[in-house]
Image 1 (cartoon, rainbow, N blue to C red):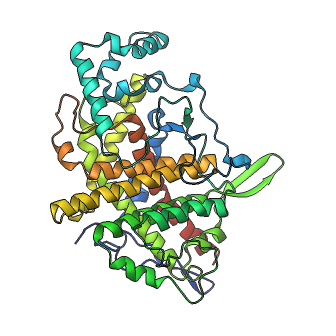
Image 2 (tube, rainbow, N blue to C red; image 1 turned 180 degrees about the vertical axis):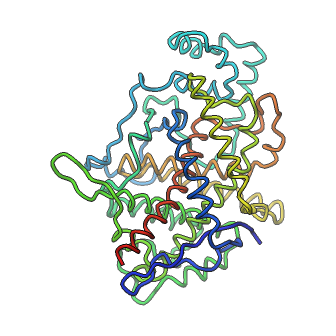
Amino acid sequence: MLRGICLFLPCVALGGLLYTELTGVLDDCFCDVESIDVFNNFKLYPRIKRLTEKDYFRYYRVNLKRPCPFWPNDGHCAIKDCHVEPCPESKIPVGIKSGNYNKYSHAANTLSDVTECEQAKELGAINSTLSNQTKRAFADWTRHDDAQDYFCELDDETSPDSEYVDLLLNPERFTGYKGPSAWRVWNSIYEENCFKPRSVYRPLNPLALSRGDDDGEGFYKWLEGLCLEKRVFYRLISGLHSSINIHLCAEYLLDEGWGRSVWGPNAQEFRQRFDTAETKGEGTRRLKNLYFLYLIELRALYKVAPYFERAFINLYTGNMQEDGATKELLLQVFNEVRSFPMHFDEKSMFAGHKIEAKILKEEFRLHFKNISRIMDCVGCSKCRLWGKLQTQGLGTALKILFSEKEIQDLPEHSPSQGFQLTRQEIVALLNGFGRLSTSIQQLHSFRLLLKDNR
């Protein structure tokens, strides 16, 4: 049995109905009723929020121009709030612009006495200034990168279409993007990548008409008959979908006039997606899956902490004082993660017959990688940005959970060829978990809002 702790929000009565009715235990783990809420909202969320505002984590390099590999593009969304404003080159910290050579930035930090322009020049020419031993190490890391079992289709950071985006200036919110284009993306994810036969109906669109008297229970009976790994896969995707929907409900376009947009929580939209009565109980399951996903990514942070705790690992931007503060805050986050009393136990996954387990793990990885490719089919640029980032964050978390032995064998004072993370993966991992942490905090806010509207 997998073990973990989860929180279920108390019921909130509104007009005789029950909203966010979450009771009992999460599927596939043991849970405590209030632990995650208290832990996240009072201990972890404030630190994660501060961390993702730091320069190292606010700039994300992404290619938003990759064509959809599965169906013809619908064209770019014409809604003005779908637009993503790339960051001018002059605004990117010099250490970030230098690229993946500062993945292990001890050498880069020795350049602190030169000007930014000189520093950028030296970092750009780093291959010609490093020792032969270090050059060979870089070559080994590159070969390992090429051979890694990634769970995501990674953007080519050297592509001319890849641009840096300031995540703080392009926040995730409801842009008006909806309808057939948006639902085609989610339908493709659920119907073609969640190990589900098309004959099994799954209630997906909370605003769509149901199929007669079918309340979707047949899907959940089928789901419980699956092996643990395939159930976990579905719950991860459902949890990610729920988290994104909560963000859109919490940052909804409430008013647009006189050149000024007003964003805020939309209680009606939240009820349509998560209320027990309006979703025939589906909303409760969606929120449970959000908490399940939170536990999975929290476990990944716990597992990867030793990687970052080594002294030579720096979150390098070129500003030594800022970089030191960022590293210290990240270590505080890991200390809080360690204080969580019970973590998800992933050892029961892929624990059967070796050959069968290897085949299932590869199938699991390829299904998730396919979902990361579907994110290039999202028509709204801002939705695509945050979809790609959060998908890559979850993919990085899975990579960590399936690399336990490599992390345990990390050398203390030198880089490892067995396990490593690019800056892009690090930024996605922490921002992706930050989005889950924000979702749980926003659920608390919706609970209070619904109570006030009672």
